[in-house]
Image 1: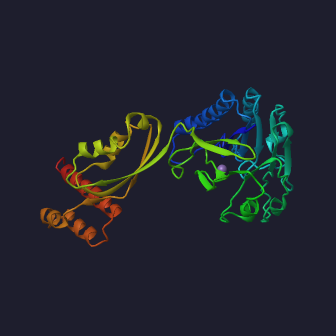
Image 2: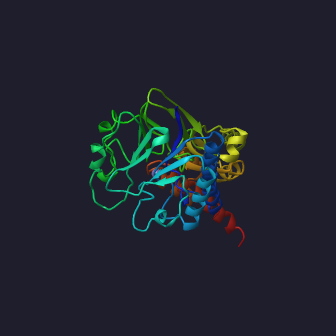
Image 3: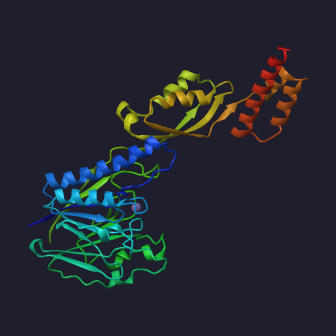
Length: 367
Ligand SMILES: [Mn+2]
């Protein structure tokens, strides 16, 4: 009999989004995280999944309230035929003040409550053994050495569940020596990297099921697997409601207002722009008369969320400008700026300066 499971991690329920989000965006994003969590529970119920493995950072501990944890608990209870195994990560450490300790979890939920030793959970009926160790950030920079000393029973299906880094980039207390585990386990369910990462066919980071920022691009979802002593199959199921999309555009000086606006407007399809998060890097050169703030403000109305990075320059013909204004204050000003290095900021100063000086000139006629 094969065992079915869903493997997820890094939901970060309760997370506060600062990014470049306004209050509305942050609130909506927090709700999205809940919706994705509910979707995962729904998947378990509808497909009669035997196990749900959560490999740490289920919550964003700092911001998660006791009400949030109670809500998680009651959702788990709805999936009463799925055994839910939850281990902790660096954002929801199993420490003295962890809310996980103060909740009456339903019978189908197994919280990994050890951080110094391995917790072995044996599910006899299914012939499955799950090994895990929680994470507590103690400021002690020590590897969890106990991980590499695990002994498994080869008769059972063995799964290792943990939160941490297998590439040696994070502090030692987060590291997992995965090579020492590979022949002992049939599947290694990891959490911590927010992008899908397949270290090997049976060593997987599913990534965050709902992406959290622009570093978390592409598809986000969970692993749906079926395993027994002989066979292993898995598929990636997309669960994310929104995507974070980074686009680069190249502008030309001959592009007019409407043209730039259209280019920005059509970077995503109709559905995507209404639910995804866009960041657009504007490259190239634009006409010096172009009011880019106006273009951006107008473009923004077509998107649920769009932010821009200005990497373009203005097409300024300094000689022509100087010809036009030489002999007066504006001319002197142009000469001054021209001698500086040309970049978007000095250009903005120049264009703004000309604008101000010209207005003053007009203004002086009023007297
Ligand atoms: Mn995380």
